[in-house]
Image 1 (cartoon, rainbow, N blue to C red):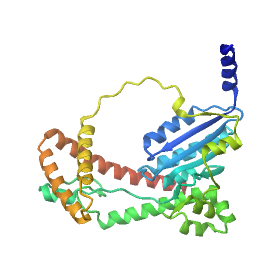
Image 2: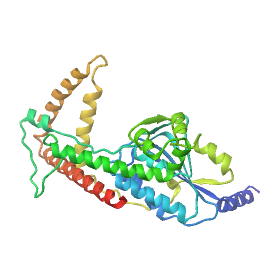
Image 3: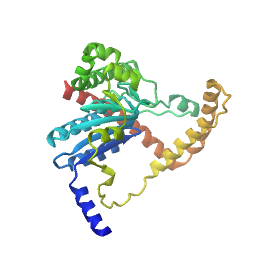
Image 4: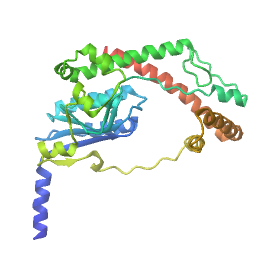
Length: 332
């Protein structure tokens, strides 16, 4: 009897309508976005299916164009498969994460969510002071004028380029959000230009504040929404898709060496006594970092890995600026 019941249960489970529940947690890494893109491309139309996207992510995306690509893919999949899309903020939906959150036909936020912080930025790390302390001279010569070299301070032209690029990308992101949320702002008595200045320019809001200004539609959770609107739908998540067996690649020595460097820096910063002032912490960290690099740079493997890191950092900054320019041209 139990076997028959199981067969009937399986039959209805296979034929019952589905909520495809995508989840993005922590940072918007390229790998997370690429994985979800692959799941979207594998989707097929099925009557009654629904898309849900739950987000708990802070702004830490170094690749805004990839976020835009996922944004467009999700929007097109929802339209093509005739599947309504609902979005949910769990702990936080900040920066590029809110752009994805704004896609929902209904945008729901946990009562404890933090929402907003829509901005554009260029990350930059400089080793200039460290190199001076260690007596290292390092430079990169290219056929063009290099920007954001990690071995020197940003030049005025670097800063001007960053400010211009950030402003243009921010305006593009604001316009995408306004395509979906513009009417919601207007219903709250907020014009689109006012929304750009007062809501979509880096400000952060609680869930209650976001409800009042039109960033979200309601306060609640995914499961509350599911029980009230789609109680007979089964939930399926991308994690349950069958995965092909993959051969784990050999770990690059550069990765291990840079992981050691990151761990050392984290230990230095976390070992400061609670009574120490910021100035004392910085001074202590500078001394210990200098000792660490003086010791490690004598090791050929570490020296090569560190040089690769600097070159990669330069190339990433250059690539990011170029991709942002492509994004601006694509959206203009």
